[in-house]
Image (cartoon, rainbow, N blue to C red; front, side):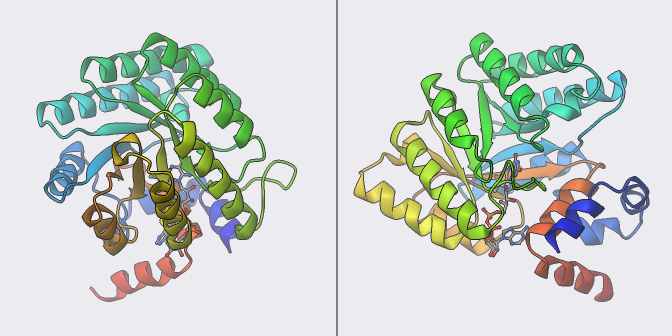
Length: 303
Ligand code: FDA
């Protein structure tokens, strides 16, 4: 089921049809803030009033032209500027292929440098979302480069399902680069990644312990009750400072749990996607939880 959805997330014709459908907003509103930056800023304001932070994701990936990559960079710069003016304390989450990595490393590097410079000027941070394993090395190399230029203004993303992740985390800890730890949302072969939930969860917990022990302001990004309980037990047993890490969750996913985390006095940042290129992100969320398909289907029927 998961594989089938991940296959659908790559289908260009279906994507074009879905993204231009008039029914789209009804489908997507649970997981996507809206089509415009103002929609994402409104959500970030609401989150702030509930003591939650935001990371704004201008949706887009695998862009094919220099113009599209520059437009994405400009959209992110505007998001950082507007969030700064509104004192939202928001970061941005960006995919390196939205800034042109499929076109050339040079184009991507220039756009990324400009974006991270803006994060530096606005006291914010660029979180480098991690895509499939074809991009892992190039993504991390850009993170290292940008951290050297603007230390404290980037965060790497590490996927617990990849075998290589422990070595990557050790290197990121050594360089004092903040990490967001997630399970991983792409289809990866058994040569590279754990395949069963049990193995991925075990790896997540192991890496989480490393990050909580010696990471630089890590983010624990999961909605998994069992793992969150383990995190809370570990934090309390080691007397880890609450200000030294944050939890991260996706907009629209497990909203009651989000409230519980904040009410218990922990920092929580919500990943807030917005923009017209919503299809691949949306289908990955369906892949994570097939019950979402029924949820979405009901929203179409209950007009
Ligand atoms: P798991 O999938 O085991 O789910 C645990 C429980 O959470 C489920 O039983 C269900 O109740 C609930 N749940 C999970 N997903 C849901 C959904 N879509 N809808 C409704 N309920 C759901 N991945 C990646 O490859 N690169 C990245 O850069 C990021 N970035 C990122 C940022 C943030 C803030 C988060 C929270 C996640 C990511 N991810 C990601 C996605 C991540 O890899 C993973 O696919 C999802 O978070 C789902 O995994 P869980 O850890 O929630 O556990």
